[in-house]
Length: 304
Image (cartoon, rainbow, N blue to C red; front, side, top):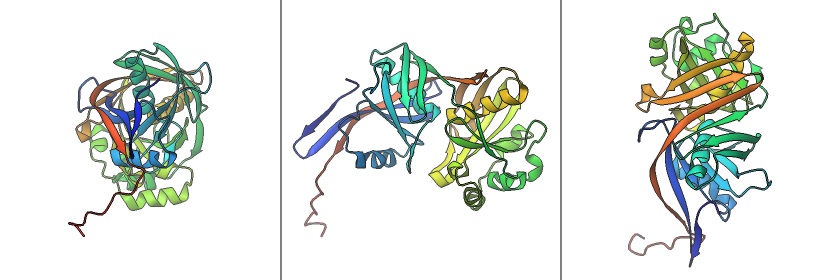
C-alpha cells in the first residue's frame, strides 16, 4: 500500500504531501504535490487536482504493474500529462523512501523504467533515454523569448538547441550571470516558437551561464502556466546529455537554479556514455487530505 484513501458517503478522500525538491530548506527548491496512492482516483480528476495545486508538476503514485518496479508514476503539469520530469521523479523516490522502500528502486514512467536510489531526504535517478536533437531555433527568436538582446546569446560552445531526453527544452548558453538575471520572457515570442516547433513543449526555454563546474540556470514555460520554474531536472538531464555529446567526454556539474525567483535550488548532474544521473534533496512542508465529491454541489438558497 503506497498511501491512504477512503470513501465516506458522497466524498472520496486521499492523502497528499508537498515536498520542496532540490533543496534541504523549507520554501526553497521546487514545490511538488505527491499523491502517495492514486489507485482509486477517478481519471477525470487527475488533471483537475494538478490544476488545483498549480505547481509546475504533481505526481500520482500507483502500485507497480511489473514485479521489478517499486511504483508507477504519472506526472501532470497544470495543463497536461507529461511522460517525464526531474523533480517529480526525485520527490517520488524520496516519498517512497519515507514509506520504507529502497534504497534501490525502479520507477515506471511514461519514458520507461528508471533506476533510482533514495533515502528519506535525498535521491538520485539514472536515465538512458537517448538524446534527441529536435531543432536549432534562431538566436534572434530565442533572445526575444528571453527578453534579451541577441548579443547576450553565447555561441562559443553551441547555438540554441532544442533537445530532449524525454521532455524537450531549448538549451541556450548566455554570455554572463547578469544576462541570466535580466531575462524577462516575452509571451508572444514563445507563441511564435511553439507554432514553429510543434513538438517543443510550448517552446520551453532553459537558459544557463557556466562558471567552471557550476551552471546557473533559469527555465521559462509561460504557455504551460509556468512563468518560471525554480528547478528543472528534466532540462538539466537534456543539457548534461547534450554537453557530454559535444565534449565527447563525461561531464559533471552542480546546477544552481531558482535564485532569481527567491527559491534557490541545487541539482547534481552527471552525464557519460549515454546515461545521465540527476541528484538532489527534498524536505516535506505540508501534508493533508484531498476531499473530492462525485456529486454536484447543491446551490445555496441564500446565495441564489
